[in-house]
Image (cartoon, rainbow over all chains, first blue to last red; front, side, top):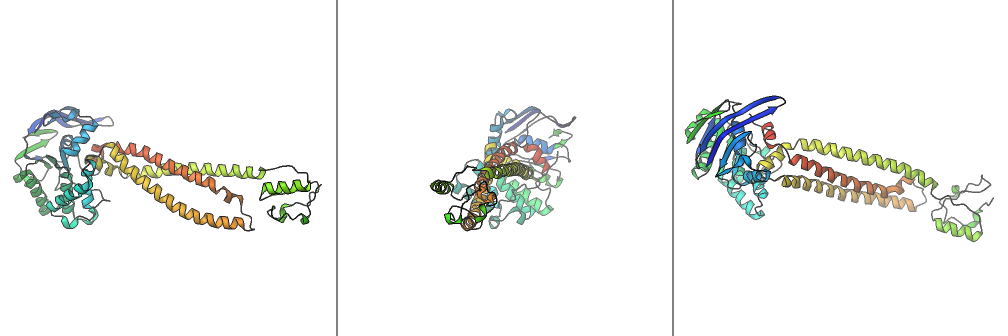
Length: 220
Length: 195
């Protein structure tokens, strides 16, 4: 369960202050499939980065399973990113010099999973996203949809309970995008909490919870 | 004053016949391959001599030191600049490692492992090529052709190579530390995403 209390994020660029999130309070239950809708620049990415332990809030609390991650130190945040959250991005963000299999094995390597075990699990995950025939291919040799499925396998590598996806269909055609959302829905059905930021309103039907963000305020 | 006739049979100690300057009648300059052998020979003939050992060598050494210093400075600065720009292009990669749970130390370890591999492979290739070249140099040295003294300074270049390898690894370490502390949020936004 995630509880967010009075979350504020202010960016300072040179001398200009940009308020990305204004006093956001909400809670997300375990096992929800939440979709965060909002136009470009509304604060979607900021919200996901804060939840994913990539960035720290200016003020407020982010309580994940009873711990306020806003007060985590660097090592604790790394541990959180490693074990408790999987991130999926709009531009797939695979390491171009590693094969699909190696990309999926990477987070397990960081977590200290032994070699044989991580290879087995990576293979299993790639099979789950129907890419067992692409294991030895590099990102540049794969289509956008395939790369995004590898990215989902990467997010699942250390079996985190929370999956955050930032515009995961943004770079894909409608049909491929739907397949990606269906895959995320399957993960949600298997018990994972999934939060997807998007501005594609057609994806609404998949969500169990709709959140709307506008000018740094979240409703829903 | 003491001319050295060719009947002295000093071919084995002198480098070339031209080393004996017969026009300077107050004495001659003798350059020896084997300094001790020459001394022994001169003593056995009761020839008065003055040691002028290393004067020429000194000049070469000075020149070589300058050259090596130049190489070190040039090498070190280009290593640093090249590595810096290479790493700048890899900030995204480092940020992704961190997003996927790499500790800062693991980020440093990845870059250091790469750098060390590069150094070891280059040293192996360098040593193989260097040995082949050194073999030819030593063949030439033992023949009657007199080599420019710079060839004799090969060992100093080996020291410079080792020094540069050290500088490479050190600058790699400093830069890895810097780049492993990348602002993940900022870089992830740069490589794709919005506010």
